Image (cartoon, rainbow, N blue to C red):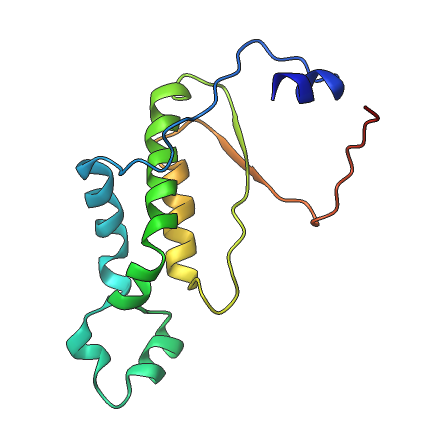
Length: 140
């Protein structure tokens, strides 16, 4: 990473990589996320009703099964939140690449909960997103 930053002539004073991003998040982080999602989560009993698909689509709800399907990604965002709270609370501005949602897999409430998890209780936060085209080139 340091070599890449140098090739692009990007000055930096401190570089820290996150080695344990796949580690399970703390219980407090999990509770925080569950609290965000509780009004958008449909239990299995409600999901078994005849109109379950209609309810999920119309109201932007997510089933517990769908939530479990993206549990690894959710855990990654919660670990990133913990790291941000640890390292960036005294920053003047935090700039982060906007996570890309997968169409028809990630519901709007889930995606917004991920963004809220990353940015709540933080200094001003700027999410940036490109158009999937690499604009930085270098010759080795």
